Amino acid sequence: MTLDKGCKGHIIMVNSQVPGVPSDPRSCAGCGGKIADRFLLFSMERYWHTRCLKCSCCQAQLGDIGTTCYSKGGMILCRSDYIRLFGHSGACSACSQSIPANEMVMRAQGNVYHLKCFSCATCRNRLMPGDRFHYINGTIFCEHDRPGAALLNSHLPALQSSSVLTNQKVC
Image (cartoon, rainbow, N blue to C red):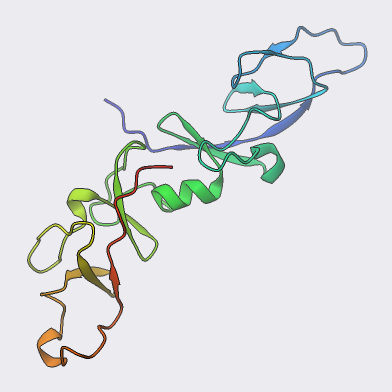
């Protein structure tokens, strides 16, 4: 079994029509068609039409927005979507284990968590969509176990509180 940690690749634009050098048309890794265009892209050890190398989430043509792309779980992603979906490391912020591309996740303050890891630091109860939680200094607390809860009046707004975002599937 191998862990899918993701892969960062470079995008290189190639001139397919070099004068005096005969070349057979290459097949596009995206659509499978022959690449007869003057320019093609080479990324992740495969050739692509410029229109076919796209982010699986936002559909941006990757050759137009930069020179890098990311691959994880069979998806090709732009940098923004890779970070949005998997964080900077592609790992759960609580357990540091890899998050598979097809797994549902919870998010808080820019961090990404496995569903089972999104729980109160005090009582260890798993937080569900719609539950209120408090994110204090990088730690998640349920409404009941918020530090200092007994000291605050119930009508005062909670410090750094927010609602749990709905479970979100990748893309």
